[in-house]
Length: 365
Image (cartoon, rainbow, N blue to C red; front, side, top):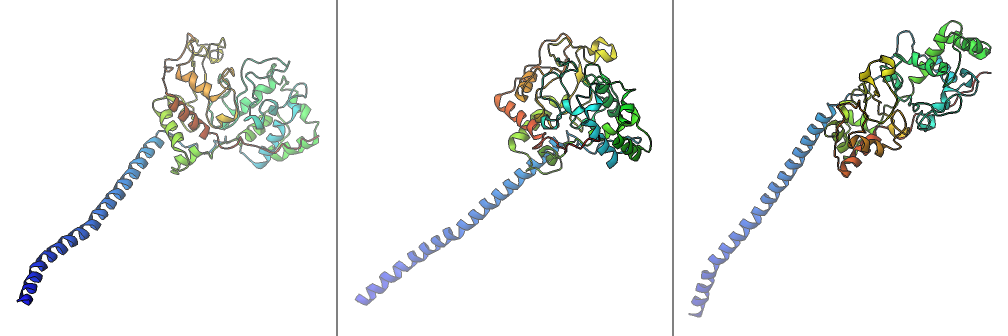
């Protein structure tokens, strides 16, 4: 009897054990499926986010143009001989009327090929009317000087040399002076196949200046598709530059300049472009500066009145000052501190680590 009772008890318990085991197996089998689905969803979300980000980057990049190669005039090929000759002339003080200052006196390589002064120092050791512009990427401009009074780099090269308030040299006398230097006579003959002329002096100087280029910055690499070349803050600044901050309205094209002239509202008596055109609409208008290397050559603006890039951003953020001929393109931006910092970070990314440097040549005696 006892044996029968034990058997009945065992048989009555078995179904419950089977049910419990079945339920346990269902749960244990279901958990990996749910984990796999969650993991797949995370992968899909991450992949989709990356695709969307890349599409955003491509859309942003489409608003800019790569710098490209320097345009070289057919009548002034950039031979090694022309570049080396131009470099010697650039650093030679005999190009000035008193043999005391060279092109490099104002365009100092260590100062971003400018001079670090608000206004350039004149031949008579006084303040000039404008700031010394950098020659970095000057080869990409379509006109030269703050007011655009020169059409080519060759023409520009002679402007400061003959200016009475700059180098104060007689252009008719300069070739004759250089002919007295045996080394120059040989170099001009080797480079141009003829004697020293003022035209060939200009060509050599222009050929050298076309080598002073910044073209490998985080910004350039980002345009080429290296999305890790710039930080998130720099990219945000680039987005602001192209959109809400409206910088790209004028700072567009390969060299980040439209090569046009605007009065941005600086309180100044300088007539700017109007001195060239005679048109009152150009009163106080100056050429849009390219932005490559901008971190290397403070201060800023044609009169050097803004000491830092932060000052420049704040100037545009408030819509400029109150010149009566201020361009209608100048409007208050009302950027936040975070946006100003991002915009500054982007501008810094346009400069590369260092200003272009050259070895100072040995000047022929």
